[in-house]
Length: 434
Ligand SMILES: Cc1cc2nc3c(=O)[nH]c(=O)nc-3n(C[C@H](O)[C@H](O)[C@H](O)COP(=O)(O)OP(=O)(O)OC[C@H]3O[C@@H](n4cnc5c(N)ncnc54)[C@H](O)[C@@H]3O)c2cc1C
Image (cartoon, rainbow, N blue to C red; front, side):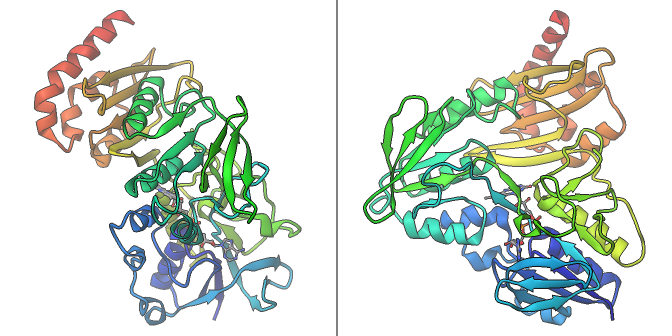
């Protein structure tokens, strides 16, 4: 029986395994160095915040794997020998495969800061990071102050986590406004204010120079690059983005760039070796999409797609329209299609922005300035229906249609009965002035 080996028990690897099992009788082994069982990485924050136990982040009961004949192997793969189709583990063990799926996810970026490996410095990605945080920041008695380096979605989650235990946080953000490489300025500035309202010491245009240790090798402070200021702290969270976790492939003949290079079929340059999820890098752009997409649902889609190919029905990965969602403390964020920040805006792209006076809700609609074609929408504090925007993007609706029918996409008609007139009137005024 053909042996399919998957490195990585995250959403991508596990989805591939489950679908291969549905479609075939192949022997399947999932390898992971991190945990015995698959868990939901996106729920890690809720464990620290006391909303759930770690066991509750595991979507499948422990018996699921044996019942479905999916073997699990704990171990770190050090090297891959593609000619003999052999994995070599850090503990000296080996494993043969017929087909190999690399689904090794991401790792937190470190930029060579002095002190970045000290005790008390951590990313927020792996289960081990959560354990480390629990050890160094169990309470505000033990951790009097924390510093977070890097303003993005994981950084703000970490700030919220520490906030939940009343641990004072200084948040160092390189950009002059929060996540403004991605968010248009009206949204980014609203999030700046929201972060500050939560008593987080947000420092914009601020870089880390160095992390200093006490006499026991534990973090005691950080030094700010621009001013030389020293901020005492017990924990430093490094959340300056993630990159594909593929260092172990150096020296193998599998082609890598920033990630493992794949074609639209998720095939690498080596026969019978595939890559999916956060660690995969598309050789050719799919529409406007980035070559590496470190998000949950794309990992799941790649896993499902590749299972078909592995089981004899070779199909292309087609992710459809871009969407994503996240949370900035109490404000939910959703994005559908493409709304670029001022820094990355396309020359044809025009925005309509509306913000509620309570400063926690806003929308930005992007459209083509010549054709009026609807390009995308960002919403903050207003939950929208994915399927409606997906359909409107497919139908290539114009912005007038979208604005007039926004209510159809909204989960909360109450909100619209109050503010629809205001939003539409703001929109009509914008049109008259552009
Ligand atoms: C705190 C946090 C919050 C997030 N929130 C969201 C969100 O709200 N929405 C969203 O879309 N995305 C979110 N993400 C991103 C999302 O979790 C990832 O995109 C997704 O989990 C990636 O899945 P994956 O299967 O590709 O890899 P991973 O989940 O990273 O799994 C890869 C596994 O492979 C293992 N591995 C790596 N190398 C080896 C090796 N050499 N040998 C053995 N095992 C190895 C790793 O230890 C890991 O267990 C969040 C991420 C984090 C960290």
